[in-house]
Amino acid sequence: MNNQKKTNGQAPPEELLGFLSQKSSYPHHPRHIRFIQTHASYVFIVPPFVYKIKKPVNFGFLDFSTLEKRKFYCQREVELNRLLCPEIYLGVVPITRKDSGLLSFDATADVVEYAVKMRMLSRRFFFKRLLQRNRVDFSAVDRLVLKLCQFYKQTESGEEISAWGSIEKIKMNTDENFEQTRSDIGLTLDETSFETIRYFTDRFYELFAPLFLERVRQGWIKNGHGDLHLEHIYLEPAKICIFDRIEFNERFRFIDVACDIAFLAMDLDYNQRQDLSSFFCRRMAEALNDFSFYKLLDFYKSYRAYVRGKVEGMTAKDPLVGEAKKKDHIERAKRYFQLSLQYATIGSQPTMIVVMGRVATGKSYLAEHLGAKLGWKVFSSDRIRKEFAGIDPYQRTGPEERQKIYSKAMSLKTYQEMVTRGLNELGDQRGVILDGTFGQKEQRNFLREKLKEQAYGCLFVELEADRQTREKRLEKREHSPSLSDARLEDLPLLDKLYEEPLELPQENIIKFSSTEPFETALKNLFFQLCDRHLELLCKSEKQLG
Image (cartoon, rainbow, N blue to C red; front, side, top):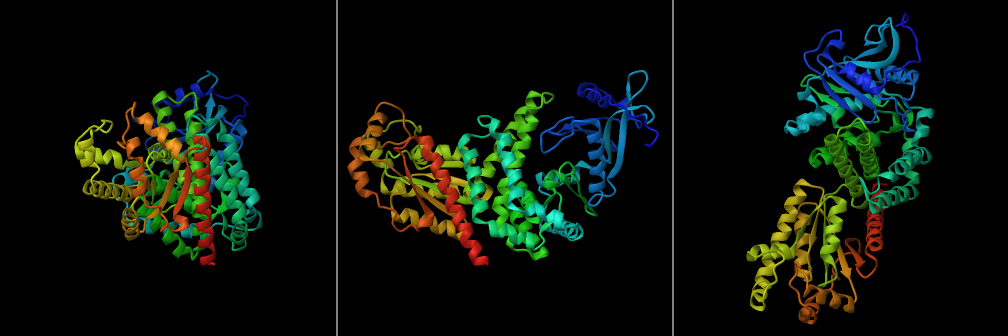
C-alpha cells in the first residue's frame, strides 16, 4: 500500500454503505451481500469474504473519529486476531475515491476509508448457531477450554499489563459504564436496577480489595481477549477460531483471566445454558489450576452483562438502525441489564424467591415488581387456586365457594402445584418467584427440602404491615377486582392461623415493610439482597482461603 495517495477526504456513511451494498463494487463480484452493524462497525458479508469498516464514532472508550485512527485500529485488529485466528484475517484494504468521484477498491486512488478483509466462515459452525440447534455438548466445551488455556499460557503478562488489574484501573471501566448508561434510565433499565448494580459493584471493591491484589500478584492479569462471547467463537469439527479480540482499547484487553471466563459464562447463562456455563467454569478452573477466580465470578458476570446492555443500547441509538432492529436491540439491552441485576443481588445459583406474609401485606404487588426487574416468572397461589376451581382469577366468590377453594385439601394441592411449577421453571431459568402466604411451617419446610434436593437457592421475603393498613386494603378489595378472596371479616382467623417463620435461618429471610413508600422500600430490599449476597461471598472467600 506504499503507492496509495493520502487524503483527508472521507466518505459520508450513507455513500459508503451505498457503495458497499452493490455487488459490482467488489473485485470478485459476490452473488449476494449480507449487512450487519454493531455500535462501532459496519460488516458486509460478501462470500467468500467479509469486509469490516469502523464507524467514525468516539464513545470515549473507543475513538474511531479520524481516518488515521481507523487505519491504525484496522491494522491492530488484524495483528491481534491472527494469534487466535491466523487463517481468517487477510489484511487491511483501502476504499478510495477515483477522479470521477466514485468510490472504489482501486489502491492507487485517494483513500477515504479502510476495511479489515477476512475470509468468510460458514454460518452453521458459529457457536451461538450451534447452541440454538442444540449441537453443543460438553466435549465441544472441552475443546474450547483447551484452546483458551493454550492462549492464556501463550499470551503475555508483565508489569505494564498487571497494573490494569488494580481496583483503581478496573473501577475506571465500571464508573464509565454507569456514567454512559445514566441516560438509558427509563429506556433500557430503571433507576432501582441502576443504583443496585452500582451499589453491588462499589461494595465488592471495598470488601474484596485484597483479592484483586492477590490476583495481580499471582499473574492472572493477561493480554486477553476482552470480548469473549458466543458470537465470536467458531467451532468446526477440525478447528476452533476465536475472533474479534479487542483492539480499540488496551484497558479492555489487559484483564484478569476471570473476566474473560465470566464473559462467556454469562453469555451461556443469557442463552439459557446454565449447564454449559457451570461446566465451562469448572473445566477452566481445573485446566488453569485456578479456583480462586470463582470468588470473582459474580462480580465479573454482572460487569460483563452490564457492558452488553450498554452496547445494545448504543446500537439502538444509531440513526441508521431501522425501527425493527432498534426494538430488538432495546429488548436485548433490557435482558442483559436484568441479568446483571441478578448476578448482583442473587448470584449465579438458580434461586427461588418466596414472597410471603400475612394477608393484605402487599405480597402480589411486590412479587410482580420483583419479577419485572429480574426478568423472572411469578407463580401466584391465588391464581393457581382459582385455576383449579375453574373460575376467573378476578371473580369474587361466595361464602360456600370460598369455603371449598380455601379448604385444607385445596390449599395443599395449590401449594404443591405452585412449588412444582417453580421447580420446573428453575430447571430452565436462573430464578423464579412464588407469591403466597406460606403461613404454615409445614409448607415452608416442604419447599426447602425440594429445593435442597436440586441444589437450588432459596430466599424468603416476609412482608409486614400494621393492622390498620391491612384493614384499609381489605376494605378497598370489597369495591375492586382482586386475585385474593380474603375479606376483612377473615382477618382475625387468618392471623391466628399464621405461623411466624422462626425456623428459617437468618440468611434465608429478609423482612419487607409495605407501609413505607414503595420505591424507597423496593430499593432498600435490593440493597439488602446485595448485602446478603456479598456476605455469602465473604464466607465462601474465608472457607476457600
